[in-house]
Length: 468
Image 1 (cartoon, rainbow, N blue to C red):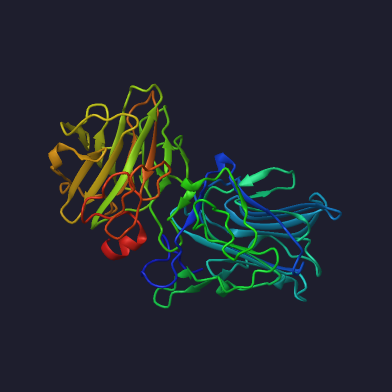
Image 2: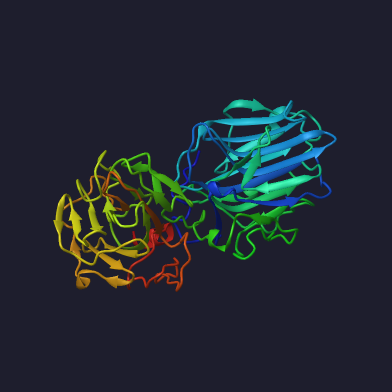
C-alpha cells in the first residue's frame, strides 16, 4: 500500500481541501438525512478521508451508516473501523441475513495521518469478488479476516431510511460514533466507482492525494460534504438536501485536512496511559495517580514554530502544577516534563524547568491562561508568552545544550503532581475553544488567540514543506 505521510501535502500543489469536521465521540455527534427514491438499488459508492483520534482494539467507530425499518426488516449498513480494522457490513432482517461483511486483516492505528477509505458495490456483478470492493489509500484491499460478498441482486441500501455521517448503528440498535476528523465525504447512489474518481497518486512521491469530485454523478440519494460552511456543516456541496447536524457546532469545523495535516497531541506518546484524550486529540485530562505529560504528533528539527496551550483547570482550582514546553518523542516512563529531559515553563512558580534544574523565569499562571510557545530551532531558542506577553522580558531560553534522542522536538505539556490532575487544550491552529481575536501566521495558517511572532509558523505540513 502506498504511504500516506502525515498528509499528502509534500508539495503545495494540486487540489486543496480547505476544511474537515472534528467529531468527539463523547458528544454523540452525527449528521443525518432521509433517503429518497433510489437511483439503482444494486450499486453505490462511499468515499471518505479520515484522521482517527481514538484507537480501540475492541471498539467500533462509524463513519457512515444507513438504517431502515421497511418490510424487508431492519436493513443496516455499517462503514467505519472495527477493532482498528477497516470494516463494512450490510445486514437485513434484524441482523439475521448478512449481505456484506468485510473486515480487513490490516489494522489502521496511525493517529497522526489521514486515510482515504471507500467501498464500491455493484451486487449485479457476475463475479462475487467484484460485488463489494474495498480500497484504502487508493489500493484495493484483498486480505480480510471476514469476507462475505453480496448475492447477485439488490442491496436494500436505498430503502426508506436515515443516512448518517459520523456514526453507524449496529444490529443491536446501538449508535457507534466516529472519533476524529472527516473530510471530503461522498456518497454515490447508483454507481460502483474506482478510487481514481476521488484521488490520484502524486507522480513524484507516489503518495495518494485527493482530487476534485464536484463533477461526479451523485444520484438521487448521493451527496458531497466539504464542510466549508461552518454555520451549516451538513451542507451538500452538490446542491442536494443538506444533512442535519446533531451535537456539532461551528467550532468543530477544522482546517486540519488531508492536504494540510496539522499537529495534534499523540495518544501513543504518553508517560501515563491513564490520561484521557478528547476533541480530536487536542484536549487532555491528566491522571491524578502520577506526574505525566504528552507530546504532539509533529516534531521539528529546524525552522521557527508557534502554538498555544490553554490551561483549562485543575482538580481543586489552586494546585497549578501545570508544565508546558517541549520534549523528545521518546519520553521517560515516569516523571514530569523537564525532569529528565525537555524544557518546561511551570505554572505554580513561573520557573523554567530544564532536565531537573529550576531557575527563575516568568510570571505564574493559572487556569484560564493561554501560554504561547515560540520555538526557534534555527538559533536554538525557546520563548514563552502568557496571554500574549513575552516572559523573561523577551529573553530566550538557550536550548543548544541538549539534543533530543530522536533529533526532533515536540510540543508537550502535562501535570507534575501525583494527587491532582489538570486539563489542557492545545491550539496548533485549529482551536477547540472560542477565539476572541483570531490571528494567523505569515502564510495565513492558523487561528490563534494572540499574535504569532514574526517569522514563526503553525505546525502543519504545508509549513513544514516550506520551512521544516
